[in-house]
Image (tube, rainbow over all chains, first blue to last red; front, side, top):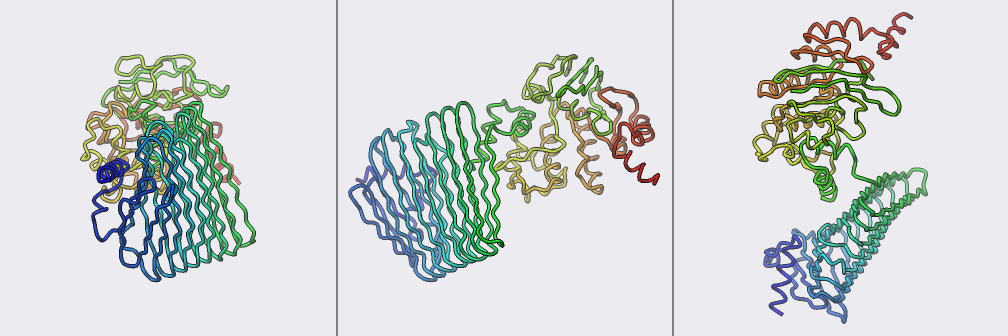
Length: 312
Length: 246
């Protein structure tokens, strides 16, 4: 097991994680390999209870009333063998006046047939915050199926923010589905950045319901696909309270035989609410490429630079 | 440095450049003056080799080499670059990285120096992104800084003075002079004769033809007295004139 743990740390570092953070007593963490908890540490104000199941780990996370966790909590989920399944179920509750930032790294470096499912039920109280940054690192075979699902309820005067990034290695099959209900004067921000190639299949559904007065919402997607990869992005934003404001911002870059589809669904159910959307799908902007070529970059390198900037 | 022979360009069925000839001497600032739609930007794009700007006739020589069929990056690698009139914006690309693209040894001091020359404080701007959060004026300055840092043999500056407030014109003029002092030949495209006044030579472009060439002051005066009031080729002036007559 010690050897596996070392491998996990190595893969974690390769995925962009900070192994030294896992040794810092001020920083809470959780390390899970398949359905085994390899390490867990918590800090004052945070209850973090992982329970191993047959196919993964159930995690109960509670941030107690008024507690703002000072450092981002490091989560490390992985499957090192070429086959396996990992089902993570998170039940998170952020009490009134509390806040937490999580930094999750998920890695499947050798995957040939690996399934990673994450299901989260998140409840955020009033004047609270929950920020979730998730970075994936997949191997090059494309044999990964990643299915993250989340249902989120946000109280009043709070914010919920996610940043999802999958830009290293093959995507495989990716099917994300996040839904969030947003209360009065609260803020929703969901950002997804993915780079797919070969036969990768990407499906993203992000839905925000701006239910509270003066709530705010931003759904932002940045996807680049090439070769025979396909992507479909469904951004749904509904504003149903006075003063609610929302924006959907979707950019998909297509190269080669790749295919991309964007479906923005914007709905306004109150005359004092407003939702806007912008979507751009197609080749890399010609002017951007020519500008970089005029500095001496070959076309392919110029396109790579534009895409890598967009996915940062 | 740059020689253009009998260049003709048609875009969307419209003749934009008509058998144009131009010679730009090494180490000089050469201004291209002209009213709106005279063909100035099309000429710049054709020299740089932008997509869609393939001449139907004529040749472009750079340092004696026929570059008419070269792609943009090959022209740039020979020492030519361009500052766009309305520069592109790049999500996620930091200013320091953007300016570094054209610098061969990626010396960060050159990036800082270039920003200082366009009066943008490096500490404040290096880590910012070349995206829509920059104002139009800031973006133009960064474009000029990128050209400056590249140390090109030929810099095509497409209306570097447009979208810049009058008070900031001085630093643009100084930057162009400094480019020349460091050995860069400048092809300066403008419709302001006062900016063209810093040039050694100027060519006046009208309807795709070079109609006058010579000392910058002389061509500038001609442009001011004959072209700006011309109701045929300067519609904005035409409107203003008709308003005056009322």
